[in-house]
Image (tube, rainbow, N blue to C red):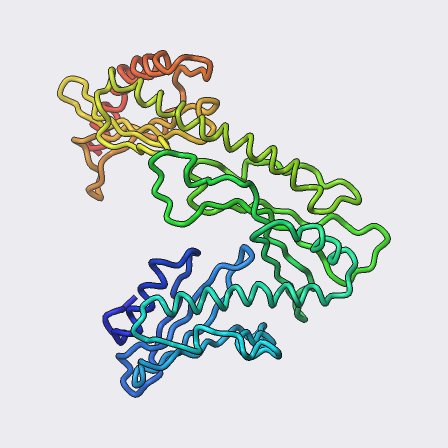
Length: 371
């Protein structure tokens, strides 16, 4: 982002928004709306909402940077009028007492508008003539943080999406040393069709979604959702789901320590790693030698460790291919392994295997350089 061409007052607010926003907002596009095209005073914000994104254009005026910006919402939200909606005209808005010298003002405005958008979508869905939807909403009122969205259009069926936050756990604190900036969350996406009158309503579409960073410790893709029984509602479905999820996340946290013990067991044999993942313990690299031949040993540990053995790759520090890149071995998988062994035995078996395998790798490197 060419922030140096943005007028200072606007740049200060935009920088503050990006660095302090509680959700991960991004700038997709910046452009100029004045005669001097080098002054960028307009931009599109990509804002997470209901496990998807909404895009709003923020329109400043570089000639009058003290003025509050205009916000242009998406074409599908023409009826969204958060500031001047009926009896809410007198409601105090961030725009009413705009202070361009306060770098936090744009952040306050975006948070305020996003909260208003949540309320707007809920009003839209509550107005839908669908008994099942009304019942779903009434039984989930006690849960905090639920977001909902209604899609409609000629090219797609009308449906309502719920994003339900799961687990009353501070996931950021589960792993010591994690540097996650935003709160880590797991959501259940529940999608109901709208307007289809059926004697036995079909089950909703269900999908588990997590923050991207959480995948370093727990794989949502490997989690199997419990079945949705006939006549069930979301409020009945959630307790079983959360119990299963909490149990597997606790196991995932314990597996971090299991991976740490394995890497620690390698140290007496290989020496201290020259590179390692100290938080989630997913990888480690050691410098090894056989006579005058020196090479790196890369360990890659999956979330299924120790059921799934580590990935092993050797990399020569003396041989290079035609592109000037260090020669690497294919992934080595044919070595002794049992998930029931103690970490020290796992390390011993791998060390003994590599004592012979490194000779094959050295021969491979020499043959490659002779070609």
